[in-house]
Length: 300
Length: 294
Image (cartoon, rainbow over all chains, first blue to last red; front, top):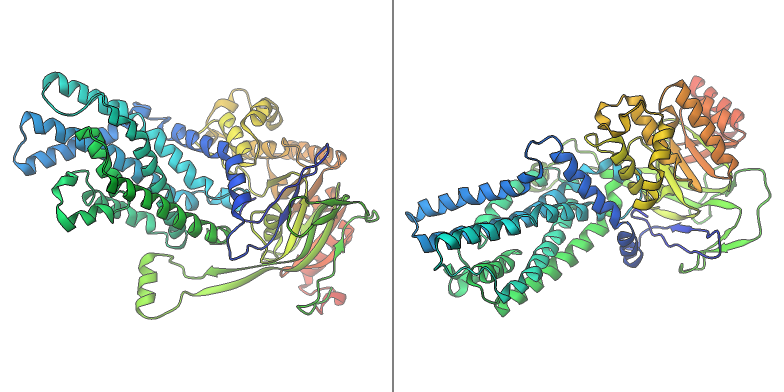
């Protein structure tokens, strides 16, 4: 349907498919048919993600191993940096710092990939936008699917590192099997949905200002330093804790630390923070994206 | 056709020679009870498409900030791509659209496909649409022809099962040399690339096929094959709308033609006659005398 209003009516056999294209009211397409078609065309987004991955790693010797190696090496670099800045680490805190940085980096890069790839998805999909009718939100959604495909192999990698660490340092408190891990899918889902909502906003901004995606590279780096990834959430006290909650990824990353490193349930404030950011990001992202969709075909 | 006051609807042009049907189809579920005669594939009602384009050469955040700091507004230009077009296209018609660059041909095609929504007016389409507005849409040059057929088919709206069941048929139609179907398409010649793209589009047995300059894909032999495939689609009572600067294609393939000029339909009728008038316009640069008041 693209960005136009489209409704279908099927009756009898062979069924006529009547589509009606009309001006958008208040520049937003009717959302029920829009999401219905979004759901019907999801296979396109899934395959687009799969084929994009296939194309990217086709000629790489290590292939998809880079999906794990990239964040793993990055985590090790940050671990060295953090321990050097601290003036070294003892064997117990060293492992928990490594584990925290590992899961924090894996989670943060999952969100960052959703946001930065999603931001470029519309401008990069210019030929599709100009020549095929489909809900445009499928393109950033495809980027999110691809980011998830790159993210999930890092989870077994995390457990492998912790398992090896526990063999050498059995007294470490980092949980390997704990009931609180049941919160992990919820936290990952909250992170993905928040990042997807933000990617919708940045995708539109990138259509209007092409250097948005380049700015994002630096913005996300600062965002990483401002998030509880290289530092523990408990390091902020009193009113300073507000910095965790005004960060769209802050409550999710703080909850990640508590579940994966402390082995405890996320706090109620973190649940509320996650919920608020999920709703805000999706509501603002969906409105901003769908209300500007009409412009994409003429601005690309 | 003369320009009309805003309050009056533009004249409806009915293409084809058959008499209008009185049996109406109801777009059920649509608010406002939309009815469409069952012999029509496309009805365009008083369609206008206007959009604004940013004429700044550098669409950067830096430029935007600099402009804002000086209190300058973004330099926008309003483009009236299609102006008050009303058109009925019956099923089984092969309609050619001619016109100079910027006449609104491609915008009209995109609006029929649902890619660009109308600014005012309405388009009602009865049938499954397939578009071939550009070659290789959705294709990834690093992937094989087979993968791209799947990707192209999914982009065009087919399901994974549908496109997989047609992959061999599409590959056969594209007539690639042995083994090429499993090679990356960046190793293809432009002709081979075009043939795969064309094959994907016409394999979908659409009710309505929208083509923009696509017949130029491939060599002479493939052009002939494409032409025959188009004829097959016509014989199966498919509706085809072709935009082309290849006027011989319009004359040979179409049973009716329209000439667009500055977003409006300037003339319509028998393709040979329309092409002749259009050629005169291109040579002399003046509009036919009866159309000068547009």
